[in-house]
Image 1: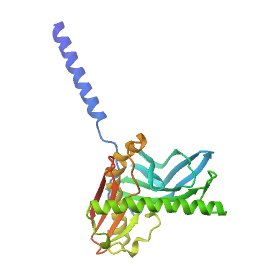
Image 2: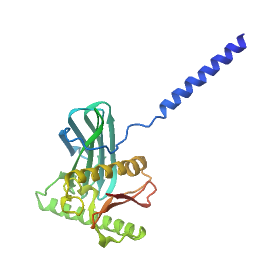
Image 3: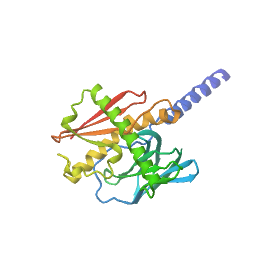
Image 4: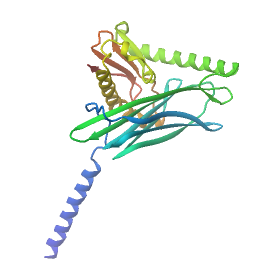
Length: 275
């Protein structure tokens, strides 16, 4: 009798452990494209960079939806002279507001580009979503000051130096990627990812319709989140890879979008999205 009791206890313990393990293995919420919710809007959303002491800056992103969402998620990317140096990713369920920040060591004569994607998934009669992008560009002087617009000759020189180094690095990386991936550059309109929040995409063939354009951007970030941010984020934190601002290539015929980037192993890769 005692033997069967012990066997039964072991059996039920194994079952409970299995259920617990399965629960732990359930995937976390991820950014996923759903039909656009036109009645939900962000009351505020922002990406900011500020100096917190002599040698450190803070990247802060925040957003608030006008109503509570089933899922709120914000992601942020920070680039220094084109190289990815910081990643933010936070979700809350349910929620209206998401805030997060990270610090980065300040270096002189650098160009800092940050971009954020603010996302909300809403469950009512059906599942819908809404999103917004924000971004910022700032520079650092040779005196470790942070500025957006130069106010002195010294800051003007620092900006020119930073822009020259950033452009040279990115053009080298992107040219190499297009060659390795056999991409005919002349058939595309190029937009760096960090320019997306302020770029006028309506002039691009196939993107003039507002609803279609928002759907394309939504699907773009779904792909970037799964294939770029999730695998590359840990590698960047460990310092095991160098990766740079992805380049978006919009087909001039308005049929598709290609995204070229460096993966978690530092190799050139691309995403392809038809629309």
